[in-house]
Length: 271
Image (tube, rainbow, N blue to C red; front, side, top):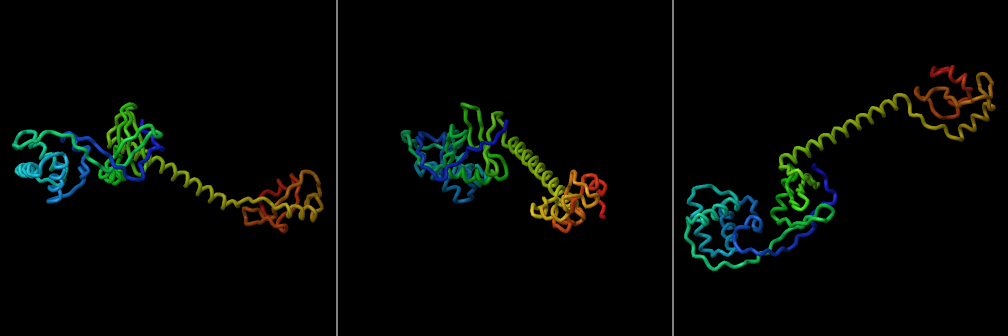
């Protein structure tokens, strides 16, 4: 089930979030230095060093980890990839680093608040992740967060929010939403085509506007309240001398009194 959540929204301002961070395990969820930001060369290296320093590493140790990561001969074009390799080097013991006593660090991050399900569920999205999310959600469904109590996953797609409880992947959610959009566009195109056809038919047959009351009164008095063809006063009707379908008008000169029988006999032919 994939449904739109009209109540879901991001906050309009960034909030400052304080996070307790005792080690590097939560790095990818916490760093304010754009885990998802593509930044090549020196910028990526400097960001990686400062990221580890923010988590308690001495600069010398962080630089040593960077040198060991370079030794793998891999090309790192993002901060994320480079930091991952540095952490891998440290975790596997390839680098011997003097470790100080582990302390809990408080990291302050900028984030936007996301609320869904009519305000019943709230989470924070880091600023860089939020900016990338907005960009990518124009092309595909991007996960905003997961509400475990309801097993609902929230998605952002082309300026709208949706949720599903079927554990959909991004590709599956995108496919369903694009299919829904195509069907909606098809319905709109069909409705517009029918409207255009209806307008064309109406223009072809003549738009039937009501005869003004003043014209009816004038014609009634002029024709003496009786059929101009047989002089009957029963079941009188206001008849167009030249039918509207053939360019006639609702003026008094084009209106006459006919009884029902004479009007039906006349048909739509010109007299």
